[in-house]
Image (tube, rainbow, N blue to C red; front, side, top):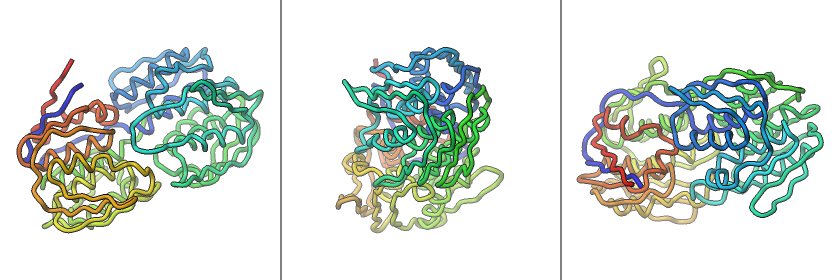
Length: 420
């Protein structure tokens, strides 16, 4: 397994360009299963998860090619049974359930895996497709869903921790080819859901209320091929902004969607970071001494859970006491013990982490546990004195395109150690 060797203490300086959003790309790739015509998706990040999803589409019978950030898919003739060993390894693969049901009236999908960040039940996914008329059972590790014909209905997609993003995506895709009108109440409003909806509209779907908690879908008989450009990755943009602040650097982030980053920008400004906005770019630098902030993660447009770990790394080097409360995933503090190995003073009390910041961090060997924890550990290593080795960086390769190369271009001393 590859690792990163980081020599910390150097401020980041320069420009970085944000890649396409992984969390938008995967459902859009799944949506290509809804038509037998060619689809072209641009600004696709070259990530292990994207390549993995391509293999899943191929296992279903689709033709897939990926070159120079452009993905071409033609699902002319597909089957409704996904490859068990492929699908179970990636959480995002659950989003093939809706399009297979919508197009074929049947889907056999293995229960998905992914990062170990707490329970992410699929009950709302199943509730949604059942409301559209599907019969669902779970046997031998598979979700087996069948429907003679899907029909529109009203579906409430709110859960204990808010709306489900992939659950909303699944119902949205299934409803696009269902008979009648489907109304999704408490739909996820994340930009990635909006991007999927826009792609479906380009394919001929009839969707109203895009970007709102109420989506109204009038089913059509057939969808056609389409071209689409994926939105920039808001979490990657947030990660580089936080890294610039943690290292006392000055970084211009290009292709950042400010309208997707309001909550992160608000907390960085409160923390004492200066942010200049200019034609789709953000310039990040410190505005004096950093100040502690309190953060609670919430569904969009609240502070994103996917940027919680990174902000914890920043608070670890910020003098004072910060409280970070996780309201989306109950086990998303696995990075705390690894940050402690670098000298961070963090204690857990229920859903909150109390960060007593300002103590110097020093390099040490640390272990990544999930995608966003990996990013937090890299940020901490960049801010620490001495050498930090971040092991198991295959996690970070799932969601950040060439992050080590991008950091090196900003002056970060990051070396990838490849292991066979």
